[in-house]
Image (cartoon, rainbow, N blue to C red; front, side, top):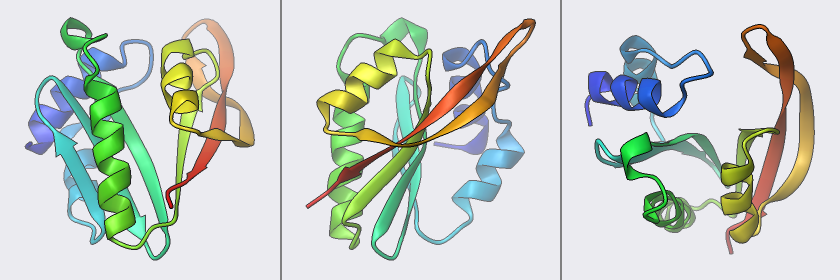
Length: 137
């Protein structure tokens, strides 16, 4: 996927947050260890550094939700990260994102930390980011 395609998907998937732009995606894709899987319907972008993997964003276009795409991509990401030497994965999720939290819980992710007020929701109160982790092996 191109940085422009990733930016379009991110804008559609995360309507209440500031979407990442194509320049931000281009910068992330240029780093060694970056792992990108998916297509215009859903994608996962992360990185593997030494023995840790980090999911930076998992986005599903609203027209393609509830089809198992996010679960398939997360499973593939974990497999590829483990093959690259990672033994633990980390990610952040908004505390109010019940769907994503249920997905991650089903994969064995548990809370490792919290960042209060991390996500801004316009006129609404800020929302905490939950830092989740899961062993990969």
